Length: 197
Image (cartoon, rainbow, N blue to C red; front, side, top):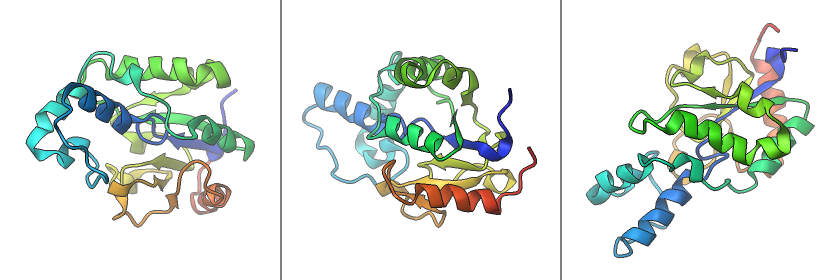
């Protein structure tokens, strides 16, 4: 049975659910311990925070096995369950990394490994891996990127998943998966986005 569009909450994978930065930094520290690690990130692309080593950082995230190895982000499982408990239907909506030819299949493998044991096979079956997130159906997209391609064409409301590098965004903001305001953000989006089911 298809979930009514009004109940769908789209969730970006890298950042909100999977600790992309943590894996890059872990590999960077292990292989290049002389490169100082920044205490605060300023740019959406982590390679832009390390201009002298940008190609090196990009090569790390382009490796085979990188996406499958990402650790869970803080409270990611709790956040997914909270969305369900609030009466919504979470679906992953993630963009592939064009420079990494393995990213599509590895993202699905990551979902199978980390979410399926708790939430079932449907999490993989329903996952959306696309560069055109604006075409996906739902009431909101929770995403750590402050500027989203063709956002004005989307039927969903953008909720920014709070990170140091997205403080310029004026969109509604979720301060982590334990943020008490999650219910209100979703309820407000349900009222402001008119979506036929």
